[in-house]
Amino acid sequence: MKIAIYPGSFDPVTLGHLNIIKRAAACFDRLIVCVMVNSSKRGMFLPEERVELLKKATARFPNVEVDFADGLLAAYAKKRKARVVVKGLRAVSDFEQEVQMAVINRKLNPSLETMFLASSEKYTYLSSTVVKEMARYGANLEEFIPREIVEDVRQRMALLQERKD
Ligand code: PNS
Image 1 (cartoon, rainbow, N blue to C red):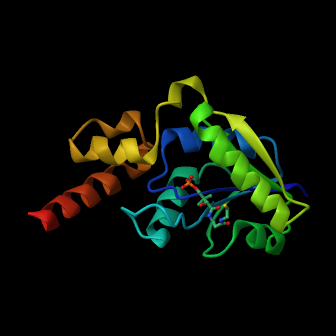
Image 2 (image 1 turned 30 degrees about the horizontal axis):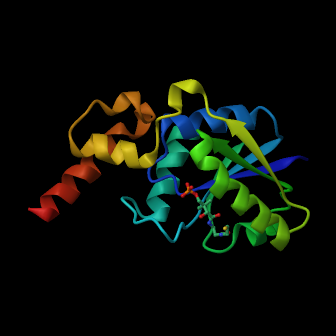
């Protein structure tokens, strides 16, 4: 059974992430979408909330599982018997950091390969940071995130704005 992991912060999952999930799920028997901690980013949602949002957004893909892991990706992959990490590349600017992570992960777990999928051109501009900015200014979120989670993101942004006032 070919198992791949698609790791990320997913704060929150975007249509760009969903596009990668759909395409990667078509290439492997099982795809584990794993919410992980990126120590350089502050969160809008708690990791367990991001898992719930991802579950809502990926419910229609039978071979996709959503999980959370709080350690190193290389160790998690070993535990889950996954040999492949899938990453999306939006632009050349993603490349340097992604290759660095791929090399570190293979150093830590030599049987782990990282495979890159080129983002769909529709989503090259899209990131969770852009989504948060759009939510802050009340833009139409359906263009950026899965329909199933639009209300969750709207409500969370309203709560964060309320707390600031
Ligand atoms: O969506 P992001 O923030 O680009 O995802 C980055 C993420 C979470 C995949 C990366 O930070 C990660 O793998 N974190 C887990 C800890 C780890 O294994 N770090 C070593 C890679 S340098």
